[in-house]
Amino acid sequence: MLVLSRKAGETIYIGEDIEIVISEVKGEQVKIGIHAPRNIDIIRGELLQDVSASNTEAVITSLDLFKKKK
Amino acid sequence: MNIQTAYFGEVKIDSTNILKFQYGLPGFENEKEFILLPLEENSTFQVLQSVQTAELAFIITNPYDITANYSFDIEEATIKALQLEDEKEVVVFTIVSLKETIAKSTVNLKAPIVLNTTNKKAKQVILNNEDYSIRHLISSESKEG
Image (cartoon, one colour):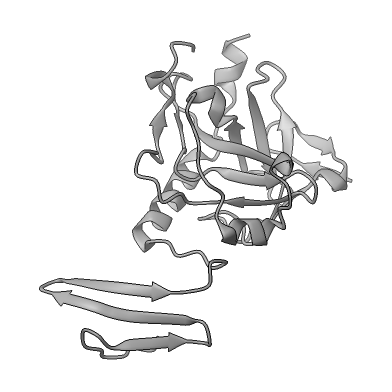
């Protein structure tokens, strides 16, 4: 993984159309601005992990619930 | 073509009905093809069966049946990815996480599946909407089940 050190106000470009702005650094929190084309999904990592966990929980292990209702 | 399924044995499917998830689903990134199979006993729910992995299947339902005011904007990224041209092409599903009863089961309103019925391209989108939960209790809206 490429790791870059940046200060508040500094930027990083990823390719031609994605710009990452370090907008504020305060204690343990970093505020990051992202300029990206609208066709790119930007999702918080923990949210994606939670959806992934939820999908894993949702894999069917039994359909008995529907059979009982009959 | 015939596929092996988790609960219905070998099933003959029409390959034109295969839903194409370009990037799979979160947690199942390599699963790019699914098929919808009816659950005869209960038409509100359907099975979303992986084409390549027999053991992998989900229950899905219509989120509008669960919560009346469900609504979200489809983002540009999804419109492009699914090549959506008309809202009439869109169908939305939500994944159900089954528990001991339907009432105790949850639906993922935060990450619905959007399907383009014309080209069968589908995507599980993640909404930037704090009102919707990943584990929305079905009984919180309905007394059925």
